[in-house]
Image (cartoon, rainbow, N blue to C red):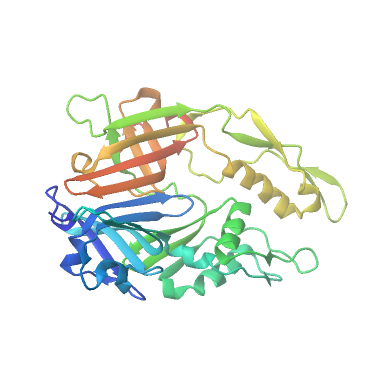
Amino acid sequence: MSLLDSALGIRILLWLGDPIPLPQPPEVTEALISAEVTQTDDGDGFQLVFSIAQDTVAGFTLLSDAATGLFSKVVVGVIVGALPQILINGVITHHQVDPHSEPGASTLTLSGRDVSVMMDLEDKSAAFPNLPDFVIATQILASYAELGLIPVVTPTADIPLFLQRIPRQAETDLQFVRRMARRNGFVFHVNPLLPNVNQAVFGPELRASLPQSAFNINTITSDNVTSLHFTNDGLAPTGVAGGSFIEPISKSIIPIPELPSLRLPPLVLSPTATKRKDQLRQSANETPSRAFLSSVSKVTGAPEAVTGTGEVDTQHYGSVLQARGLVGVRGVSAYDGLYYLRQVTHHIEVGKYTQSFVMTREGTDSITPVVVP
């Protein structure tokens, strides 16, 4: 039985190829033993394990196939019912071959990352005078149209003037875009939409999306999680203290007030108290707008106090989780309510499809009376 004929009623979609990924012939898809896709805030990755048979003349034929070569494109998705859901548009970056004397036991493991890895290959030096960060990010992302990137860019508040500051790049495009995102309290990630089509998101965490199906536990008939655990870390939230900037006209020293996180809207009524404070030691050398952004980005970039981890059996849960969205929890009292899904790992093999997850929020006690079933 191949993964494409799973008894679960859930089928895997697998396309391979360079420069355009295409559906594969039956001999390739039937050789697939397992597929794993991990979606995280810092980028997505995949691992595909194939059974490889040795031909007496050609050797391991799957190894010589251009579709499975290094830097070949990969599309991995799942079809639940009639609608496909793309998990990753990726690029193969690593091969692992495990030959075995027993017939049929040799394997080929293909690993890789989402298509943003192609932005991380060339170290560059560049200057962008008088351009705000969101314009720079848009220009860089637009230059990678061949990767199927559609820029979704949120405007940034700081506009650098030539005489005060010139934004400079001294790293790869991916590292530079991520650095610009962090200094504005933003995130950067690639969301797959269709095969070879992706949103390249440069902006605040999106917490206004439609919540995914809730995790239910401690109910009589509707429990749908295999495992679920929560922690509340009082040392995780971080504030700022002692920051100030020099007002350019009067030369007065202006203290920076404690500013809220850009992670909006809030998800709880009782956020865990912030006990740790960091100094903004460079704010006096920054413009007022940059000083305020430094404070906001410090608070926004700090870990959230409450973390939930767990696993669901997809057939029992009934839907496919997508990281970087909201999900509800029901049946854990103060830990009920909405969470932000930071990581989802999809593991698919014959007769089995599980999803493990990491979700976070800023405290306890739900701000919503009910969650989506």
